[in-house]
Structures are given as C-alpha cells and as structure tokens.
Image 1: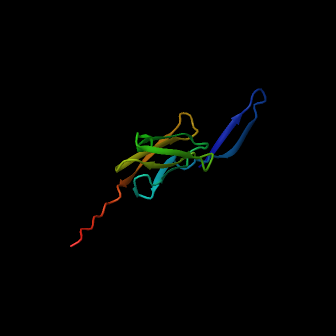
Image 2: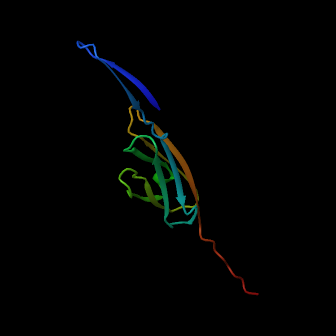
Image 3: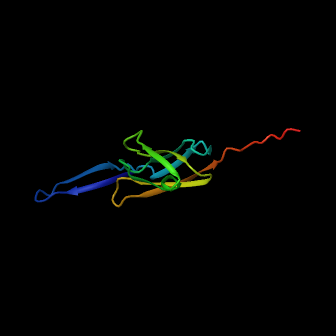
Length: 132
C-alpha cells in the first residue's frame, strides 16, 4: 500500500511531501502435524506446530491435550529458536490421542492461533494359533 504523507514544520512553515510504503505481513497462522498417525503402545510419535506470517519472534508455544496426559512420555525438541514447536511422545495406553498447539506472534496485542491433530495408539494384536 502506498500512502502520501504531508509534514508541515514550524516555525519555518515549510512543507515536505513523500511517499511511504507500508508493508503488511501475512496473517499469523499456526499449522500442525503428527507423524506417524497410527502407532503401537510405547512407539514414538512426533507432534509439530509451525507458526508463520505475523511478526516474529513467535512466542508462547504451548501444548494441551494428550501430549501432557498421564499416559504420555514426551520431550520438547527446539529445532528452530523461532519455533520451539516439536514434541516427541510415546503413550502407555491405547486410544485416540488429540493435542492442540497454540502460539502467538510479537505484536501488541499479540495474535494467537492454534491447531489440533490426533494419533491412534493401538495395542499389539495377539495371535493365537490353535493346532488341529
């Protein structure tokens, strides 16, 4: 966007006009993923949230849901100082595990966004062969 700005000074009564280019960042957004989406009990899964747009640095990455649950064993992996956004977890019980990651950008007031992903944790099937 181009904006014409006029400045008038005092006491000299001089006027200066210039063109000001205002850059607007892309909207702040958080996307997320989980890999793999189906795991066995105690098998590691990586949850990732990625912030983009808005004004960096991105702040206050926080996780809720399964990744902080009683059956979760997790570590946070900061692969990028602007996006401390990875959690590697394993789960000690089967079921659908749903987690949300939230973050905000560095404007005042901050803009917050979040996204949610899920993984299915399954038990190892037991096969019993019955001889004839």
